[in-house]
Image 1: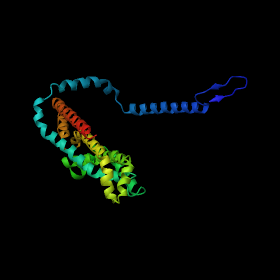
Image 2 (image 1 turned 180 degrees about the vertical axis):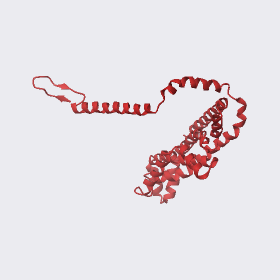
Image 3 (image 1 turned 90 degrees about the vertical axis):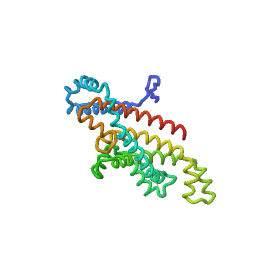
Image 4 (image 1 turned 30 degrees about the horizontal axis):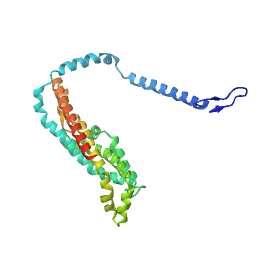
Length: 271
């Protein structure tokens, strides 16, 4: 901004005085908020435990090695349960997420005023609640076991899959839709022949990516009674069997690495 001062050459300023003042006020409140948050955190923190944390971590790490390699025979069945929870939960999420995505997309929803907001509410509700919280609720409702874990993963997956899928639907080429519609096709035929072929690669990529995420999340659902490796992990932690915990960590790491590899290969094939 150029400012003219009588008797002086014109000068350029990056910000006006008002903008500079607002900038400093913003920094002041940011610092004040940081100090307040630090005080809240510090209020219930026992710093003696924090200072002792490195020693405790080293002690637990020493107890973890060597891992209990023979304990792996007790983990095959829980590992299979974990994979089933992730796979069936992902399938359940897909079955619900696909119609929700079509109802949420502006170019396929039957009503942008009533139906679309309801579909978006389902997506937000699913994404707002962590799978562990879903598992806690479901264990209390339907009891502990694999079913609670499967439903928890499914409910958590709805929002993720539906959100990415409805965004892919809204980005399709409208020319193909108009071409199919011009032939006299019905609404269902337009979706079948013009929309679905365009979003199919994105659908497979999203689904496999979510399955990969669910493999990781399903490993801890057993901590609240929803089956899988988490049950074995909870039991080993309760008995302070740290070498067994190390073995469980190794199995979880191996499972996640393999699922990541499978996910990458499938996405590479379909995209």
